Length: 216
Image 1 (cartoon, rainbow, N blue to C red):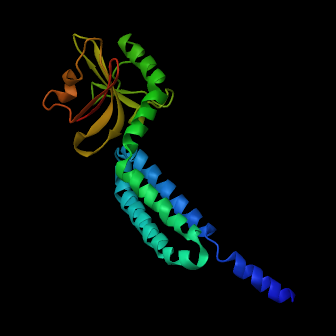
Image 2 (image 1 turned 90 degrees about the vertical axis):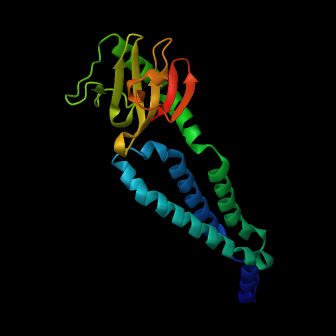
Image 3 (image 1 turned 135 degrees about the horizontal axis):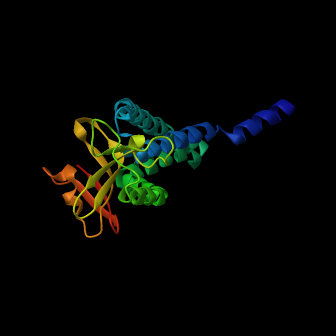
């Protein structure tokens, strides 16, 4: 009698989807994290890591999609709960395709570090911080004692008749590619930053007064 009751309870409970759901959520969250912060990890040498990490994550996520789709036939026998892993993956795919993840990450970066960056700009303008890298007269290595406000905690300065331009890097790649937040002096034009003397910026977005996001 007890054995029959146990078997009846087991049949009524049916197979569990918890493990599949947990795996789908974990893979989706990790995939969205990589997609969101990919830009900030694009500097050398971590950019080389992305050459391996991004394809691997894409492959794992694709496998998750296929695997979760293979659970859909169980809906007929075990209930609609087996559609949840596939729905999680489908929602993640829609977010990857349509949500401005990079833009969200940049906005957060700008807000989190703005106060520290503006203090550093004031110190540069006051002459307290000067270029200190022997082979680059425009580079200031802030070092570990300062807040981490730029890739490598290096900033690029350009002193002009209009005032001082200060670039805080968000990524730095091969062939002198970079992106970052550029602080321009009052009345200044970000296109007059010396890095754009020969070629205009490929990306130029105003974030606030005297602040622009740029890419070469």
